[in-house]
Image (cartoon, rainbow, N blue to C red; front, side):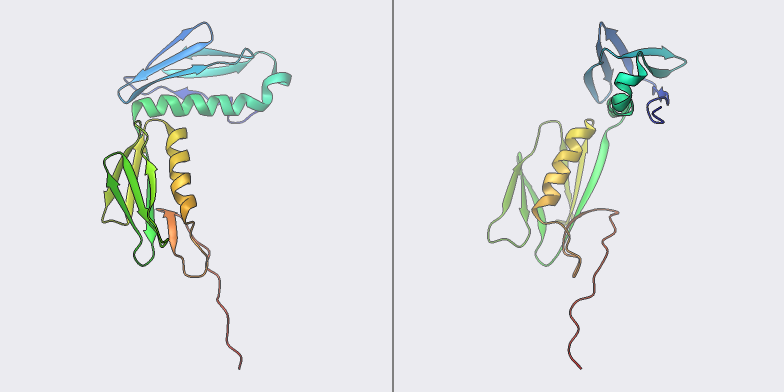
Length: 178
């Protein structure tokens, strides 16, 4: 039995959930989402909590926790946007926002450009701190991972693009002969 799937999802105030056949419509202050519920699951709402149950546990057990997590992320994203913070460490490393483009200067001979999706809000703080926020957690994480992949942190000097509270395990460099 999935430990995540059987947990109820608490519904924050101001969130409206409607179910039409297998389509779940979630609307809130920060966005509207839709989720198609697989045929092996049923949903009930009681006491400001959403309960997800399986019809046939043997067939649908492997996606039980995933389905519950996707629904919880959409409900929480409609109530309050998610946020990720990226930091650029290195000499000359910086972030810039130019209209709908994000420009990274991270030690290459050319700047790296990204088109900012319309559902994301991007803020640059002190040229080396990038604050991303969105009500869609999946899109936010994917965009942040694409940015980090341009120059991941390296273990010797700790330079690169990293998440705010990420711990980089540092390695010892070469030692000279004695």
